[in-house]
Structures are given as C-alpha cells and as structure tokens.
Image: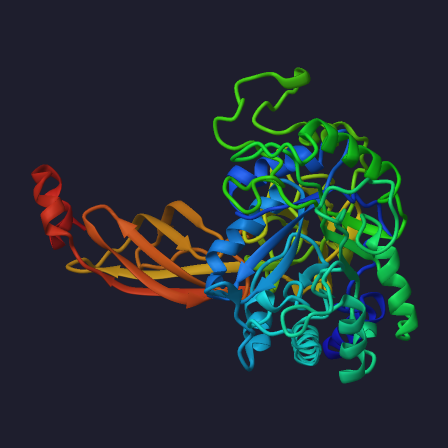
Length: 577
C-alpha cells in the first residue's frame, strides 16, 4: 500500500511540474530599458556611474557592454563583476576578445570557442538571457589577425554559436559589430556589404543562427555627422544592415543591439576645435534617442564610451579627463566630472526594465522527519541555497509553501523575513511547523515561491510516517553496590534533544516505562546516563515506537570528583547501601 501511495504521489508531481527548458527569452517581450553605456574597465568606479546614467529618470535594468580578453578568463574576477551588476540592476552584453599583438588583435586559436563556452557557462549571470558578442569589427584587418578574412570569421562565428548553444541554450548569441564605413581595400579593409555576402556564401544561413543583430551605428564621416542623417554610415546604419540581411535570406526578426555609437567632442587631452563641443554632442544624443533610436525593435543602445582618459578615445569619453573642470558646475550639472551628454541622457525618461531572471533553490540542510509521533507538534529548520540569478527578497515575497500533504500535516506557508536579501550562492533557513495527525503514511511536497509563483522544479519531496510514542525503559547498575535505587539524569542527543531529570531507578536498577513523546521513532540517539559521583556513560541506540530497553551496564565510580567532597565519599562504598 505504501509503495502505491508513493507512486501516485510521484505521478501527481510529474503532471503538475514540468522541468524548466533552457532557452533564450525575447528581450522585448517584457518591459525593457534600452539605455546603456560601453565600459572599458568593469570596476565599481565605472559600474556605479553607469548605473546612475542608464537607470536614471524612472529607469531600471539598463545595459552595459563589456569586453573580456582571452587572457582574462578568471571566474572569480568576473563573477564578482556580475554580482555587482546584479546588485546595481545592469544587464551585461559581453564582447569576446582575443589579445592584442602589436598593432592588431590575434585571431582565435583552434578550439577557443570551447574555452569560451566553458568559462562563460561557469558564471552566474544576472539575467536568464546571456548576451555574448562574437569578437569585433572583423572587416578591419587590425581586428582579425592583421588580414581581413570573411570566410574565416563566418566559420569562427558558426563554431562559437554551436559551442555556446551546446553548453547552454540561454546564451543569446550576437554577431560582431561591423565597420559600416570601411572601404573595399583588401587585405586591410573590406566593405561591410561584401563581407556579409562572403560570410553567407561560406556558411549558408549563418545569420539565421543569430539571436540578435549588433550594429555599430556611428555618425560618419569623422564621427561627427548630424543625427538627422539616414542610411549607411549614420546613426541609422542598422536600418541599412537590416535590408542586407533580408537580401541574404534572413527570415528571423533579429532584435537590434547598438553596442557602439556616439560622437567625438572637442574636449579631450587637447582641445580640437574641428569637433563639435560637448554641449552640442549632448543635443545630438537627445535627438538620437528621441528619433533614430526610438525604434521598437531596439533592445539596447550602449554609446562608446563612459570613460577613456588617454588617446585615442579621449574625445569619445563621457567622463572628463582627470582634472578637466571637474570641480565646476557646468549648466548646473549634478556630476561635474562628466561632459553634458551624461547629464542629458540622465534626464531622458526611461522604462523600468523587467528582464527575466531564473529563481532556483537547493535544499542544503534539514529534512522532514521520516517518522513523527501522533498528536505532537514539530518545528523543523530547512535551509535553502539560492542557486538562481535573482536576489531573493529584492522585489517580491519569497515563501516556502506546501503543495501536497500540507493540510493533513498542518503546515502553513512561511515567508522570508521582509528585510532579508539573499543573493545567489547565499542561504536562508525557513522554520516550518508540523502538527502530526493520527497514525499513517503521508506524502509531502514543498516548494519555494516568488510572489506566489513556485520556482523549484521538481519541488522538494518527503515521506513521513506518523507512529505511536517511543517508550523508554532504563537499566543500569553501580559498581560496589547491591542496591541501585536512586535518582539519575538521562540526556538524549540526536535529531531532537531531550533531558530526563530525576529519573528514578528501582533497587534492581530498572526504571518504570517512560513515555517520551519528543523522541522520534526510527532515529538514532546518543543516550547518556548520569548519577552524582559516577562517571557518565553513553550508549548509541536507535529507538522505535513502543518499549525500548536502554541497558547502560555498570556505572563506574568517579573517585576524583568524590574526593573534592570527602563528606560525600562514603556514598560510593558498599556498606552505604
């Protein structure tokens, strides 16, 4: 009968809970904050101002584009970065990079896609979608081993997509952004259109394997053109690229990620009067977000770049060169260490993003007792580890709820403390109470829930049997004595603890039957019997419902302790009976 009940229980769970399937989520299916920024150093000195910039004016969960070099695949370092991004509600877009060799970037080595997949999969990402850009502007020789090679990049992209997807379907794979203004001057440069056609010929359908499209929609020529211009080489380059993708047979609707864009400004290490001022650039950004980048298919716009304190990108930097008017309040700016475009973008109204995050848990300590005593109440600690992506308790209520068997056992939902935050990797202990009914076998399923949405699949399953009380009968003797009568102390240490004070043994060294409703049947305890001036004696024994004989044998006199009280020493002697 017990086996049948268990089988039915497991079938019910199978019908109710379907395992989570790993797959990317449409980033535009939930509220999305498209504002972002490109970072060079993923440190708190950049992450904090990035948060203030992209999550300002009602915004939340904006984006940051980060670069990781092959020599920097350090799990501890980047996990700390991702943890900081999670805390500050920033979504990482990771761009893969090899390493520089002189004036150019090396090509990936054979099999490097496997190394990237292993490394990136070992990180706990802040969101379900794991955005990864496969290298950078390969239609420039300096970005691809000093020689443009569209065929090689196509094969590399194909292998890397496969490696990442084989590792985890949550990887949201993106192409390298291309230099849309590059001329056709092989082997140093290749026109983007020609490059894309060559790629598609080498690996037919390669672009349909992507999850989104990365565009470097710069305002060329010279990174200073008007935000009103359209077409190739403008801030609307992504529209031109979408038409090429259609021509090449792309049928998927690829969401757009503008991971590089932005204007040069006159201010920098030296003032360049041929460039627009930072105040003018600020107006360009405002117009761009209001018009060109106000497209429903754009997921993120991460201008290049937050901070660069030296050539060659000082004129792109949102942050002023150290010491450059950083103590002045320009136009009443709140952050004088940044150029006006920083304050302008801060002031643009944004969306409170709600990216999908995985809620997962592992039971690391505690269990529902396999047997309990009828009509008794139990408090049980269950410790869970946050193995998901979200911070428990940050936005909604985390609860431990009963799915099956809770009503019969009197189990009520337990909420996590409201002021508690549990980050991935951390643990939290819930205390549940069980009120044991009459005897019988009960199946129980518990689950954690976020705002009443259960998130562990399958839930945590237990079987407990309600049994009659444990009854103890004690037997012992005393060395040098014939009469063992007197008061003793019995300690039971185990899954629950209990002390029996003033335990009375008769002359023959046996006790009456002692009902112990606190001891749990079928569990092993360390029982210690004590009597003044005798050495305590411990035995280990499993107890069961009904009568259990605990035979301690003979207790030995504790002469050293008795000598400290010589008036009591006579009690150990045989004639004191």
